[in-house]
Amino acid sequence: MLGNRTLTEEQTLIRRHFIDFFESERYEEKYHQLIQEMMAASKSRLLLDMGDLLDFVPIAAGFDNVANSAANVGASLGAGIIREPGKYVPLLELALYDVVLRQQPEYLKVDYRSRAVHVGFEGPVGTVRSPRELYARHLNTMVALEGIITQQSSNRPRVMETVHYCPETNKFTRKEFRDQLTPMIDSRHLPTVNVMPKTDMEGNLLRTELGLSTFMDSQCAMLQEAPEKAPTGQLPRTVELRFDDDLVDVVKPGDRVMLVGVYMAYTTSDNKSFQSIVLVNHVIPIQAFTMYRRVVSVEEKLLAFAAKCTQTDGPTGILNALSLAVAPTIYGMTNERKAVLLLMVGGVERVAHQSHVRGDINVLLVGEPSTAKSQLLRFVLGVAPLALSTTGKGSSGVGLTAAVAIDPYTGERSLSAGAMVLADRGIICIDEFDKMGAQDRVAMHEAMEQQTVTIAKAGIHASLNARCSVLAAANPIYGFYSVHHRLAFNVGLPESLLSRFDLIFIVLDKHSSEHNRRIGRHILRNHMTAKPG
Image (cartoon, rainbow, N blue to C red; front, side, top):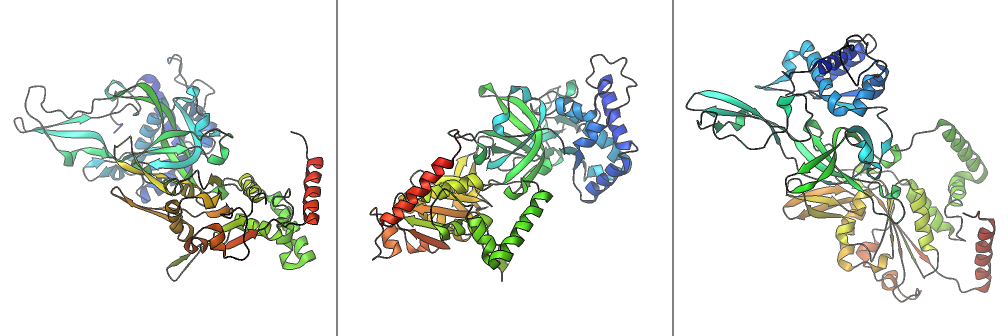
């Protein structure tokens, strides 16, 4: 759709430089193979390493007559793409179109339509930011973001070109449609009004041939800042995303992603203010454990430590040694610490005879007030790479699982992920679990056992992943635990919910002066040795 454009001298030169990049001696073999793999897989997006573009400095010949050019001597193509993506990316796609046209012209034809080729970027695009770190100075630049997809619209095809037939003259006419987010190349590439023409210039009636028109898939989503990275006392911030063509439905609500795109501003017809959006060109779904790189030196030290513990205390030596580092400010609770350690490590997920066996461990701490249950939860929140916190009274069943919301992009109903969906492959800590309403607890039954959240309401039927471990703390309903009654009577929770917890610990307050004296010594020792700050 970008072909046959009237380019200026500077645009023609930049396009020529991108062709030189693909044909350079250093990168020709690499990208020739990548283009062949793209065509073999019938894909339409080529991933380019930004490091290669940053290293490629075009020859300065031909810039003498181009005043104030962004591609001056010494400036690499990658630097131009990061600073001015709206100027460079369309010309890069034109250059890629030319390269593909030379190698395999028939690939660009799908039935009677022409196939569009796109580019995506990976590698050193810049600092990976969160939605909170986007400011006005980042507008119209290439940015790299990470966060959680919390809301996603349905696929909405966007018209690119329409074909109209006039019965009076027996002629076909074409009209292109562009929105504010489409890069502008020349005067014929300006944003257009999305109104289908009814008559031609002579007043003859036109009939729109939708079967001959060209459309492109389009989808909007909301990227939320990771909850564990939000400053204390502040709500996580969000930014709107748009996925086009082959990037539609690549991610789903609840996925943690890292993406590259162009941060742009746009206006709407019913709103006079500006809104911001990220036009995504590459997205990678990531898990919490892939956010941290492996360090070989640290792994060697851990293996040596494990071998020493096993040699000293046997097979349980590693568990005993590591459990001492779990919430060291708490006195006692040896078994509870081991359970929390196993919960953070997790188990192995299996599929046996077409049945799913979860690998995540659910732990419930039941105890009287002031028995350090909340301290254990705080420790997990501070140590686990992906952990969310909520309370029984401050959360609802919809907030824990998923909610149906009105999508502002399409006006249709869409799903908004809840806490258990956002904590996928992580841990969710629920304090005051016994204060949760009965209707809200029912919503957790499926998520805790099947590790999915199924929604069937308002015309939406969907299943979202909620593969998380639940660490909950509850108080007895009467303020103290009665050892003469069953657990369900003391906590006030149904057996159907208690059975979904793998480990349940009853933490009692021992009424002993010697026990209180040991706890007091432990607390004083912690305060005496703690560093101020």
